[in-house]
Image 1 (cartoon, rainbow, N blue to C red):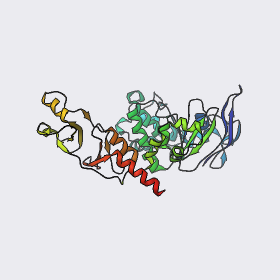
Image 2 (cartoon, rainbow, N blue to C red; image 1 turned 135 degrees about the vertical axis):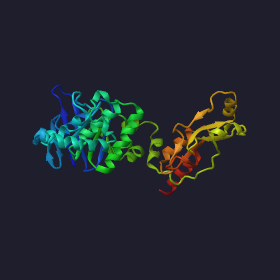
Image 3 (cartoon, one colour; image 1 turned 90 degrees about the vertical axis):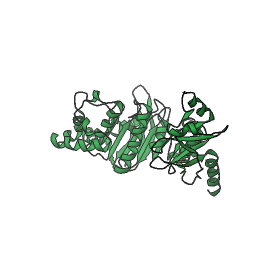
Image 4 (cartoon, rainbow, N blue to C red; image 1 turned 30 degrees about the vertical axis):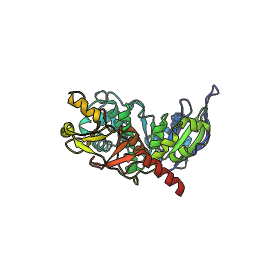
Length: 366
């Protein structure tokens, strides 16, 4: 367990970076520290591995005061992932990953062999082992950073805005990867971010920091959304917190409506009236695009086939959340979100009205 007990960090010029912080992160939990720039979240995390020492209060890891533990020994038992990976450019990927095990006395050969296994665990092709960091994409570099932090199998992992330098698509992939790894490994993780959506997606508990290093609220994501402690927390989460809260409600009970489908090769023979929509499917049966009477007309003129493609925006898996179901319906030009099974085959459509009705029914029973 990581425990902050009335921890304060005050610099010689009088700046208070962290003010009387009391927080517990139990073993095996992924806790997220979130807040605006300069609120003390990164300072708090760096005190865990003594990159910064507290001015007052007590910070313990597994019951030991970190200020009384040799900092080198402490850090060798804590994985650390930072923004832009922080890889050593002169070392190959496999040697970057093997760094900490080698420092702990493991033979280079054994460490390199184990590093290949860690690469596979974090979704990296072992063929990349002999490349240098500059030869990798940003997402691959971040995966190497995660692999390096996991290589010595530390019980604690510190992650300082690790995904903020990659594009949104890669960032979402890395977030999903961290959730998968955490479900398997159950490390004690402190993850720092300034992105509230990332915090709500990843955190089992989320600590919201305010100006002056004050902890405003420390709660489960669903509780933060439904019961923000004060105006600062509510404002930081945003005005759409009710919509965000839908991600914690399962959409498994929603009714599925019939959808008219047509294979791409049969679009020319479609007979659609005003306001009618059909779902165009690929040869493998997966959904491709919505089309209406105007789309058919454009196709016959040799122009673009579809008014609006699906591109993932209006797709919904029945084991998904209410938020995904509502987003699917709202994203669809027909008003029907496309429900698909695990093989991406169309099984029906979801409506926004059904999501709202389900929420009303849930409120009546709680």
